[in-house]
Image (cartoon, rainbow, N blue to C red; front, side, top):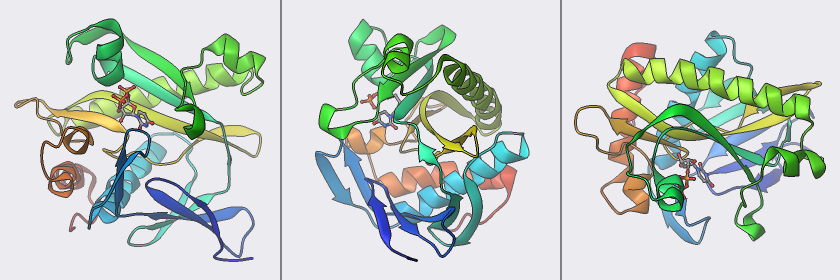
Length: 241
Ligand code: UDP
């Protein structure tokens, strides 16, 4: 069946298409925090996130990272490969922020000697608990070989994105990725937008990401638009919101 709502997430809806191997992902005008406990409708958010994620996925693909993106069909809608999502949120940190600052009593913004990769088990009912490699392999969520692939891909994506954001005066503090199984391979899925990363302006150190919503520090769409305008300047593409 085509155009059936398959899954409604916090920031996107996913629909079936006529092709069983292809899904349609629609970015929503909704912002959530506290694992969905706080929810707000914000006009224009779907569009700006769609555009940022599109530019970043295209940049990653042009640099050899395989992703689920097939094509962008209309404003806020993308066709993607139907993957089996691995139920792990893979977080990479270049500097201290958020839960890591709270957990280890560290100063936000402090550079880490080496990037950290953390995994969380994707399960809203359990509030996405932290999971280590031994737990993830014992629960057969991942094989050790797959974990190696995910870590290598995550580090490669980090190197590419640090370089990209450096060119537009932004520090990539941390981010979250999701991977899916497709045709026997692990490929990057979901999205990359200021909803799931921390981006700090290199001069002002102000947040250009979802912390403006989490901490009520300003208008989300105009802040995300700063990121989009800077990205569009070096990557091209439509930047009107
Ligand atoms: N993150 C995310 N989804 C989540 C949890 C975290 O996209 O469910 C992102 C978050 O935006 C940040 C990074 O992962 O860029 C690290 O988040 P952290 O563990 O510091 O948690 P937070 O402070 O966001 O609760």
